[in-house]
Picture (tube, chains in turn yellow, cyan):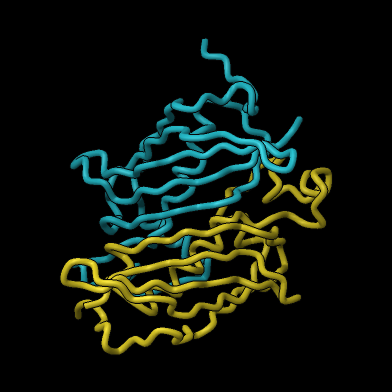
Length: 138
Length: 141
């Protein structure tokens, strides 16, 4: 194997969407169960103004990583970058769908840096996270 | 005895440094993470082009994110922004530690935020594995 070739990528290309139902058990496994946590203590989350426990924003960065590893492979694991803004809370029971499209390809030494603009929507079509991620191609 | 203060905009200092506990990456951490984010890529369990298995690139993100807990009582917080740069893959058996420094704090629309830059290293070799920065909202009392 090796880096994906830049010739096989075109600007504007859409990445296959990635859908993630988020169960409370997954949030528990990710964040660790403890009292007085907005992630794993439903009553505490309600006291803080949320209808249900919140998935950590970091869980959504894992979905971006998964999408980018599927798209660029090695060039994301070594040399990848990600910049995200969490714009709306994600609650236990939500289903997120990640979308991404190739925004640019720029020379970086002998390789190309491929930048993907992505966004994440919940089941109501509300954006919960936006940003860009990049990795290297040959 | 060290007394932990409750974190707040007033007590956090720009330039303040944090360090996480060290953490040995174990097979069960890979399993738990794969379940949590439903990502069972074969590179995490079988083999990878890097020679042997690697772990999910963001598996150690929480180590960096919770560094401030080593100095403050943090009752709750919202994560506003996150940046990662993946330098070298992380593997099971590595002992890793994150180092951070507060580089900014600011108020926006009546809410307080702190910005921390971080580096996660292989403690034994000193190799930088991941670096980046994150912005966290400081909850009011």
